[in-house]
Amino acid sequence: MQSGDSTVTSPETLRPLIMRSLRRSSVRKKIAEYLFDISPSGSYTSDIAYNVKTTPTNVIGALRGMNSRYRDNESLISLNLVEVIESGKNVKIYRLTDFGKEIIRSMRERR
Image (cartoon, rainbow, N blue to C red):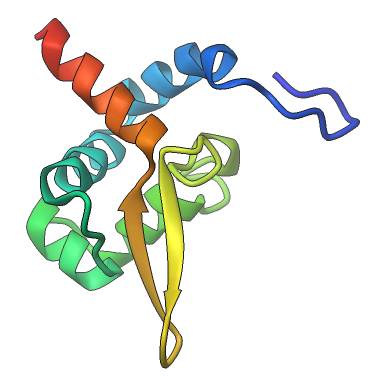
């Protein structure tokens, strides 16, 4: 992965970690698939939670990381699968990146 010197990791190097991360957490996988289904649009935390049938806290953990429950280095944002769009009035919209779309598309083709 990364050494202590903040080296940028290529998407191809991240791919095994991404697949492991999505297999380990059904919430991460459901969020990524939901964002794929609504792309190119994005969505906000409570709407994502409603559509994947989980709590907003779990959504935040899967997107950003949350200490022990959702590892920061396996969060959808840190894996470059999801991007944050700052909207007016302190609203954050989450949208799948092009790399995220590629990953979800390849997962669906393998089924």
